[in-house]
Length: 479
Image 1 (cartoon, rainbow, N blue to C red):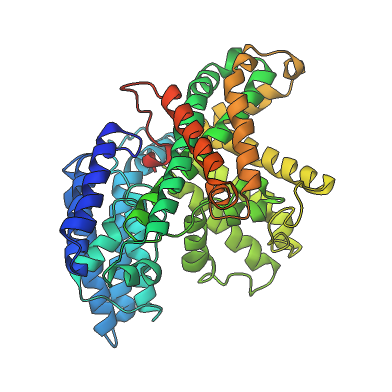
Image 2: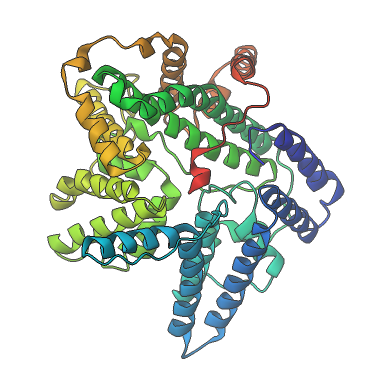
């Protein structure tokens, strides 16, 4: 079930009305309804994977209790629990990748022995709910959170449907306390949620889905296209993946607000970043902070010398790349971003841009414009590697950009509507960059008639660009 599908349009109001009007008397009844709704939401993808989700829930729930009550075997219990989690994720997501890599390695040394791969369907959301469970047991081990005896509350923490299939990756210390109390309907919170849903749908359905066609065409036929078209394809994919994933996150956070629950912010206007370090503080925040807290800091973080900082940075970026999928392109993408950020790591300037760009000004300075353009360009070239089917394709695509055809006219420039909508997106997000999401600013500053005209305009654009019975899906569902 997709957020932008007709089935979800029916599902959400039913769950909302039942939550606040039928089963609102106790916290337990509210959570029970949301858990059943979440299981139904997940089963709508493939009911067989529901058993895997329940198994993951039970393993980490029991592990949390055992780790908390144990005195001498905590570390062993943690290792066993993490091994089960990583083992499940590794089998479903990486088994065939490792087999193919091993077969290629054997062939390269002259051994003609081939191990068979398996036909494995990747369970949607497995990377996200596995990380939910792992963070829970690690936090219990480190005494950062207490285990919960209530299986219902914990099950909902892992499987809560707004975040189940593509995040944000929640922490027990943030979400569980909200599930342990009876929620009261808050009109202002609900209206904020509707605005955030609207903006997320606009980014997804009006921009990301519109970019998808040209992007697929350019990346499929890159060998026959001029450099100008290839650079355009990279630009449009950069916009597509941002609007697709941040659009999903906006919808998830907005939907959750309808039920009185606040989720972690996942995007903070990343394309307005002035350097790569700032970009990674603003892009997929829940994943970046997860790797920082559970991998980078345990490895020593930045406390050691330059070598340790360099080593740890490369480790988290490469593993972060591999988290995205079983393909060498993702590993190369992670390594490339590590190279990008390395000068600031070595010079200890990675914490330089912490404030909002042009915080007290309407427009950025010339220096800030140059910094934003350089950061976006570097990120855009990294996205080429991310989008390519394999490394050779990524290299060929990049080399294809740098020839005389880079300055030729591309027929793809005729997609004026895409560029008009992207310009609109940039203006709205720039104006709202100091807020949690762009429409939050307009909801506060515009007079009511103009505010409603603005919302109606967004709804009209979404409706006019939506193709009946065609739902492209979200890019990050494959991860």
